[in-house]
Image 1: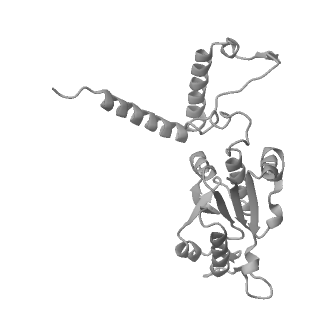
Image 2: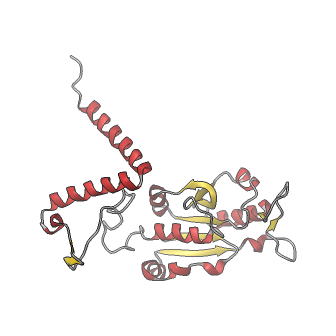
Image 3: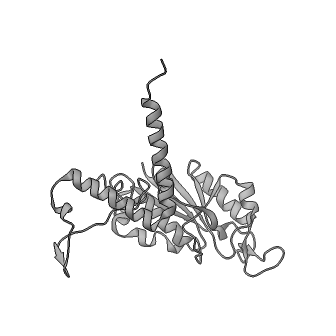
Length: 249
């Protein structure tokens, strides 16, 4: 099944962009995924194809019009009714690897790219199916670059895109932790050697070392992830204890 991406953007020439190269590009050529763009200007009704207007109440910048964006979203829904709709906005919920995996397992995704000061709020009130998401706690010139990143994250998880079947599983965030350190030849470089355990051939010790390093790095660099990981781990352990507890006599 082809993963279908529909991008609502004022700059359709930005797609597929870098996703037309490397593994994503090869997958696009094979038909593993498709990319269609929809320009909201095509739904404007004036001769200037206007999609924005001044903010109500005053202020700098311009706001994307609800009537124009609403028509564009409705068109996308008609084209692909089963696809989730994401709106790229700094006000959105940060997207996670878990959500990316859910999207990659579905029929595709429609992504609405913000510009200027953002969207007229009534768009989200009238189209509650739109999921407001952000890439990170940063502000971009537009949602297109964030959309490219999200699509890349989805495409690499599609069957057959990455070489090894477990390539997508042994990575940062997949088990709630950051990935362990990686090494390759030469064995020694500038006086630094590959850790001995990785040269031991003992797969159990290697797995234990990698798990330990993932936990250490996550605890030091991402205390937010570590706190969530510890909570899940404690909950699992508590559940296991309850399951194994002998019933009262």
